[in-house]
Length: 450
Image 1 (tube, one colour):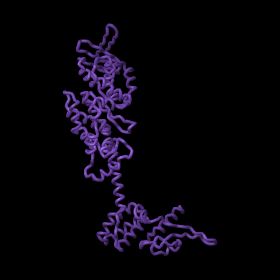
Image 2: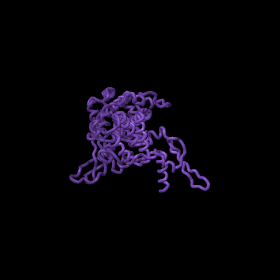
Image 3: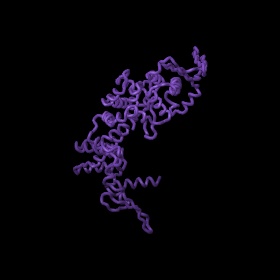
Image 4: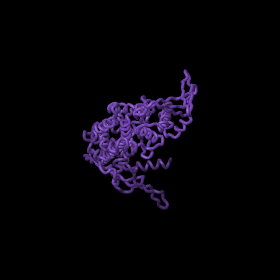
């Protein structure tokens, strides 16, 4: 579930509250290396999340998984440092956006140095106007002198690993080789491949050469995370291996849900709705706490559904509200109902202007509570609750003109349309039709003539 309809500031605040829970900070403190503090990691992560709007729509759980993995690897998810990137991906199986972690080339270099075997790692992009010499064999040679001014277009990238025992190794990939790797990536047409091709080229050659270097388990994990992204697969299994299966639990999700509750929310109604949301045959959702954990994955959808449910409950309550009028008030009420149902809105407004000043406070209150709704949708209230559809029949007798018979809404008797013209209840003092049955009859006649 995702947060697509919430304002950006509210989304950011919700995510921040989720990441800064005491239980989350406690787990992060266990994972981060000495050179990185929890507060700095969270600050850098929130900056990156806010700078990429689509990350605000990702599930908080996936964002937390990425931050936990950064803590385990000791990498900062800062696009300017280039150690790691938080990237939004649409999970087509689940139907919402998830954040995924892509290590940057500087992140790979940092992990290589921490392995204890590598003294330094250097990666460069070679351009067509550079002076470049590459030889493999018994007498290997790598020489690169960058051109001054216009260097031309990229033609390849290389990496050099220097080890603590004095040895070294290097590797080179052409642009064509790099583009083949890019073509296999699900993210090849977006993100760093588009905005930072040089960095991705360096990272590609580093990853390939790392298979021959004595590097750490963390380096291998980082490479596996990126491979999952390029293959369009979930990183969950790797996240769990790094972070532990019990780190991201219902407690964190429920805390995030609690932080998202709008001010002045009727908690009784909320608890009633949460109870309604418990499905009958779902082993994973069997309590209100389970519903909260599920709702935390897509808060905007949950609150939209809650608002609709509350609105429906209010309408049901209003429709059952009883109004008691005096005989005089009932007459005024019936007159306005009939006038409005005949669609004489302009005449209704004029009559209101004339009559309303003489009404009692109680009558005005009833108008505010109910009649205004009738002005907007007259058939939604009384017509559906107490009125049946007007009845009209055509009666044919031999040798005579067919008669149009209408059922009088007052007496229940059948009368012909000519007699209806003589009825004093058909029109008001302004000449407007207020009889429901005759108004519908006139409407049908207009439709047939057209």
